[in-house]
Image 1 (tube, rainbow, N blue to C red):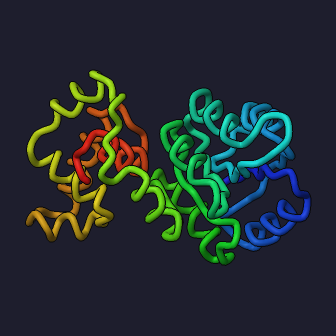
Image 2 (image 1 turned 180 degrees about the horizontal axis):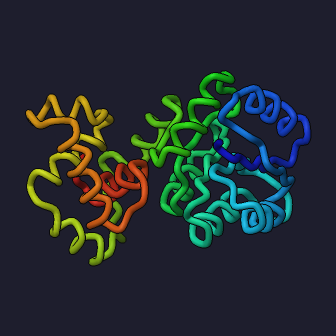
Length: 217
């Protein structure tokens, strides 16, 4: 059973999310919060598998709460609910370690799939958000990328760097396997090693790392 917490300052949004998710046999909504401060307490107490987090809320905003939860409760994966005009939040929250972004206007089946995907340990970006996130990084490697990043990148083997580059270009494991003539299981092994060597937790973080450090442009 996937245990989910809902965080949004609009009660009707929470009601809608609960209705959609509660109809699934493998998903249980275990708690709700109306701001980021309550969210941190809720996660500490209930330890949900997935947190659906709004960005703009009173008192402590969703971005601050997401960063705190990712740092203190890494087993609780955060999906940020976003709108088209929040690109700056997307980039900052990705760096903080959230596992995914979903537009508030996403259809119910996409919400359900997102919860299952993130609960399984994978990262997720709404397709409409992905292009905007990549555009914000593409061609603009971060000049403040740390020496630690560069040292971590240098520890990758040529094949692991290939996997990171193709992942950042948006390819699935199966597509990466076909591109570089490897088995899909081998690609998964390479990806696990990439995440470990770079000190990252999710595929989404790996994509951000790749663009920030100029692996892809």
